Image 1 (tube, rainbow over the protein chains, first blue to last red):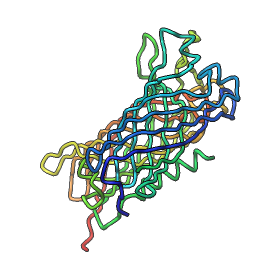
Image 2: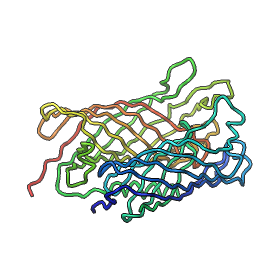
Image 3: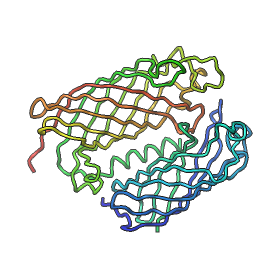
Image 4: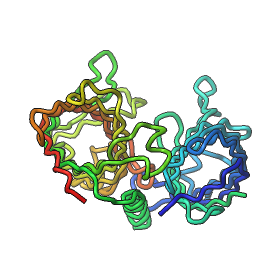
Length: 153
Length: 219
């Protein structure tokens, strides 16, 4: 089974969703991320990435409003890298919020959350299509695991 | 269940992504001893003893397995089963209500069983007898006790978790087919916020053991 990555820099659009648990409950609420970016090919193994994220926060549960975003959408810019291990892609990045109506930040102006990290794996299904999961985190605290697909062209 | 299925899918995809020609492989067994890492104010980072065992299988890699193998100097793809006794992992209590790491669990966290897939990257070797490796690994694990079994446990909210492990492994050949091993690793497991609370568990473990280098068959 040979890798079939495109041997050039690529544009990438991805979409995915996941679940954030609710405290003291087995239930959760939805999260989603839509990402558009550019992958700069360094060599056959490494790509550097720049991207823009649109992050969706399900507001159906009031508990969640108290801890994270007061509005359904937040936006961020991400830099990172991909390591291509045959068809497995180890992807990672650091994002900075461009717009985030964080309730935490409002209540703690001296301890604001401005950055987030992304780390995960994708599987190359075809040369243009990947699927996998990425964990998003604030500092050392995981936010949610995003399951999704991406198109590279 | 979606989280479980997807993690299993990714783990077995990772296993299946390498071609399996006839190459050297190994089995190793390594008892493990470690400690829970948690930063308590004005006190040690290290708490609570952890005992366990690590049973590993390594499959040799070469350049036919992909360009990443040469790029990272990866020598083996390792699959490990780890069992950790976390019954003495009790955390600590801090009366400060803003310290979210304050969790004291008199009954401990139970047992932890994990499957981890790692790339075994060679750092250096001395006369082909002594090898030093770095192993970044990812996998899934099962924990017997969660927050929903013990409401004082704010470390973990789910039985199924993902596991990340970074390990340094030293291997000294003692005969043609046997080697002595020693190593240490940092391990983290949590559920990525799928079920809350999810502070996660971090541990630092050391291990020693033996490794059987399975003789290569003539083709």
